[in-house]
Amino acid sequence: MRLFVAIEAAPAWRDAALEARRGIEAALDADDARALRWVAPDLMHVTLSFLGEVEESHLDALRDALDEVARAEVLSLRTEAPAIFGRPDRARVVWLALAGDAPALDALATDVDRAARAGVGLEPPCNAPNPHLTLARVRERATREARRAIARAVEDVAPVLAPSEEVAVERIVLVRSHLGPRGPRYEVLSKHGLSDRGGPTDDRDAGREVDAPQAGA
Image (tube, rainbow, N blue to C red; front, side, top):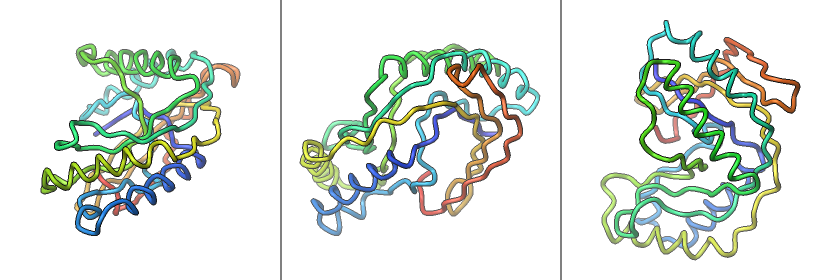
């Protein structure tokens, strides 16, 4: 099963993402706008650890590891300006930065990734975490000119986009991704409450599914 650990996107973050999308699309012509594949709001999340394919036999150990990491404190986070990954002529992802308890978020992502990977028998991570909210992915067929236009649009929108309200992040979730021809479907396997709610609370086999075919993989 294909698994990742994440923070679910708060409604305030999704509203900010929609405002960013409107601003970016307004700054692009129709052809360049079609080069972007937007993430559906119901699928938005902040990835803390992407594990890929994991044997079901590792689930209990993984959940136990996440219970231990969930002793971290509740975070207060807001979205800020959009940005891109990659040089302007190679832009590949448009994303929203997260601020507030950002150092604590980075620490949580580091701890979650290390613990989750150990729980399923993977090597420790090689790269530092960069938690963010993905807005859109640039289609592979996009030209360099389209990528530059997208980068310029993001740069133009960044100074005028208001931050979202700060939101308390009270849990992390273990998610299974079901890939299909119409896009991914996400199934929450367990929820792990952070410590300000009275200690880790593992809601196993949560079973909530989100299906939004128009989103990216």
